[in-house]
Image 1: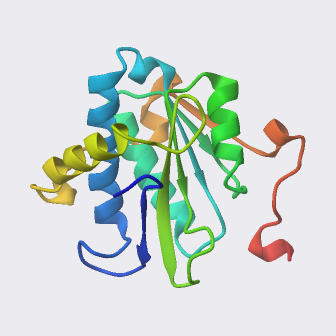
Image 2: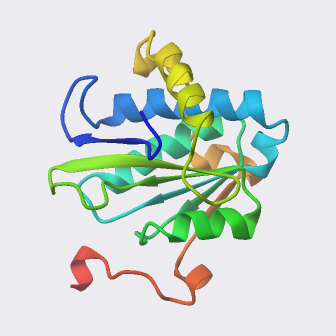
Image 3: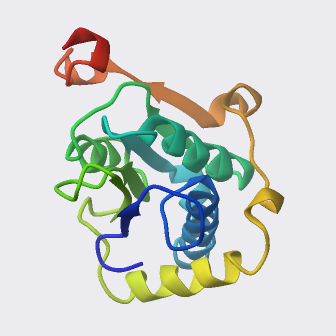
Length: 176
């Protein structure tokens, strides 16, 4: 974990991008946010994803862990370009954003970019603090990390779609 977050090939194990790594990373991020920002849960986190393999599913893991920790979540329900997540973060006054994307990395990769409340990627000391919190979260099995479905979160979950961007989102795979 570093300034831009995580990147790596999709696959099983702790050195790859997968649901277990995303759950542990999200728990670490949530714990760091709670320790740094007193209103983190109420201000919420924006979660987005691109068109990479399993990006939507991994964004769902991010959302489920954050909801279980009591965070408000603004989750894109359509794939969007990476800059839309920090844009929405600023527009909604959220404390952080997560975009599931590997940007320009090889097609077999995926990633996890983190943005702070100012809308830019994380920088020191937050990158190191989040990394330590992730290490702590990774001491136990990812399957033991609580999750919550959006339908169970009451008013803390907000799905964000094409209307938020005036319909200006990337076409889905079936629309190409």
